Image (cartoon, rainbow, N blue to C red):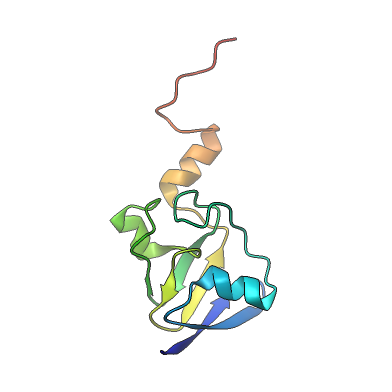
Length: 111
């Protein structure tokens, strides 16, 4: 088991997390207010942009392979190096959905 430092940019918060533990579980143990919901890698509430470092997150089904290179779902992500993360950052495809109020494949509501 290897321990890594996880720094949350802009908050001054840093944790130590082993490569066998999820970032979210360590945040909760340390009393850090990390947003989450489903805890199974689908809802993206716990998303963070990876500014430096690497994670493994094979069960992060809510991200495409390309998105998983730049974003971590902290409920699934385990560090593979020291990390710098920015919490509350979502992949561009999700940001676009948030700005338009939903996904582009949903039918408009009847008025």
